[in-house]
Image (cartoon, rainbow, N blue to C red):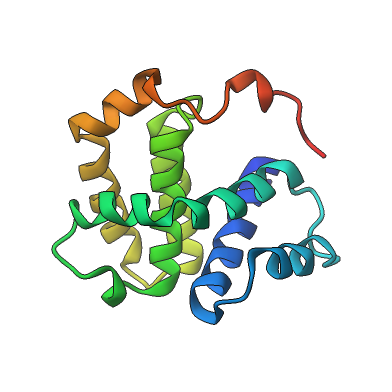
Length: 157
């Protein structure tokens, strides 16, 4: 399956966020390692950078929203699935230019690739609960826009 550059950015961002969560390395160190890797071909670099800079910066808000959608402690969630949930929650809350259906589909696909065997079901359930929360939908309606869709149109770099 051929993937677009933004999907590849998310895929690399999940790996980078996992590394950040597990090792405690700085985002800058991780970013440089990914960008300088020969496998970083076809990735929308600007979106990758946007995600790995903003997800950690807003981690407290993201985790707070996630806690409302699961009965499990976040520390007990598989670290890969936690990275996928954080990235997806960021997109749901702060990227109203991305339709929720796209966010959920990407999260499920990433969970099937990187998560545990049935992890995609858990990720889907948590994100579905999140999407149906009124405060999330109010945020998506434009009260707290992170960026406009024009800023990301044709921004492959």
